[in-house]
Image 1: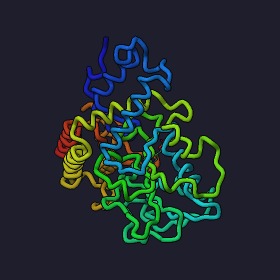
Image 2: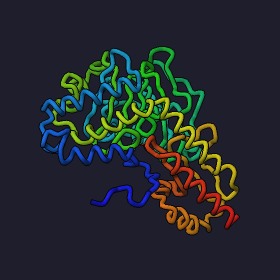
Image 3: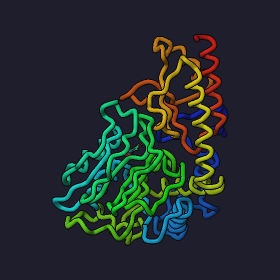
Image 4: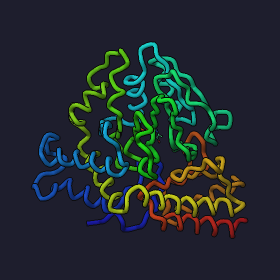
Length: 364
Ligand SMILES: *Cc1c(COP(=O)(O)O)cnc(C)c1O
């Protein structure tokens, strides 16, 4: 049988993306036989004891890793973070109400567009004036809005909030953490809701994690379809309908791996090591330049370009030759993007940095 690791690929894909190889091993074994049950994870009922235990374990791991306080529910629902974009205003914006958003790029803009379908949206800060290459700071979180929403890490542009905005007067704060959740500790108590599509730092595509402060739900005056009302999913512990069984299972395995590795503090240390190594090379070598404001550089998605774009083909050939995959920037911005999620080994970053130095020596 061929194994996945025959030729080492350094996977910089922005999402779906690299997961730990031990997770791939366990996940593939469970497709054939889940824990010696003689049944595949793909053919058991979501109401069966083994799956209920998997769901409970996934929730418990999120609670433990992020130190989720009492009064919050943890949900694994179908759909992507884009589903969250409309579940948020549906469940938190009052009829005739208003919400505040920051616009820090494509995903934030998409969230804003969805919210505008439900009420008034006040864009309190935007980085659109400089092609979303920085994080707007110093803006107030307005009071008198139903909630304030921001995107902690801008996957496409490579910017990241280093200080997460908090409200001083109790305005509920909601965050799309799709591409940096579990990469650093967060104080969950500061948030009314955190949501994240699984396929960046938590697992495969197909499920979205919601961490929801219970007491803020059910205040909109809006009647929701059953599937849209988060209270139904909380009541049924993510089993209101058939949950995405396999994505939840693989996410659980990945969460377990994070815990074994030392939790989010360890993830943060590794992430800083990877980012330090790569940004160091970008800054040192005149053939490369970062595309974002230094203080807002994402430790998850490092965006950069060549100072001489005529050399792109040569550079592309060099990194492909070294077994690197997925380094091209998002189609909307071009350039390069190195996505360095939790499971990416430092060794893969070293390979890229070596390629960059070699390339600079030959072409500089
Ligand atoms: C990828 C991404 C999304 C979209 O996720 P889907 O699961 O494809 O809907 C939303 N927000 C951020 C920050 C992302 O990185």
